[in-house]
Length: 175
Image: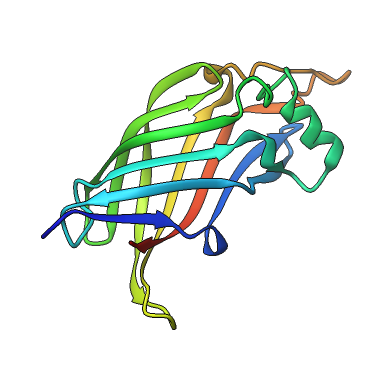
């Protein structure tokens, strides 16, 4: 098979994160602007090269004041570090499951990272475009990437948890 390039369809994809607030509830947020591609030489995506970036200024937690705090120097420093990026390789680990290993960069820190990936299948849309779907899941410790801000309530509770779940539902279109 020849090399094929697939690009993320942002209209049918979402990038979310979940983090504990006060250790008792979960806050969900998303990045609204992102892009990425998958380059493969196989029909089943095994061995594919994946690249992805998200605009940190597009963060949305459905609360403007919190979003501005997340864009500030306490967290993403969006003016200085406008992108989160990832590059890596997919490896088939089951009939519809993969492992995605590569380098995740947040702010000025790059670390090896591994996502679990579930392949949702392949379909041709109404316009004849060949598309495939994936659910991508992982968990980071935000402080390892320089997202250090922390506070403790008067009762001793942690305001923001250290572990952040990353969840992406991605649809890619063959070019």
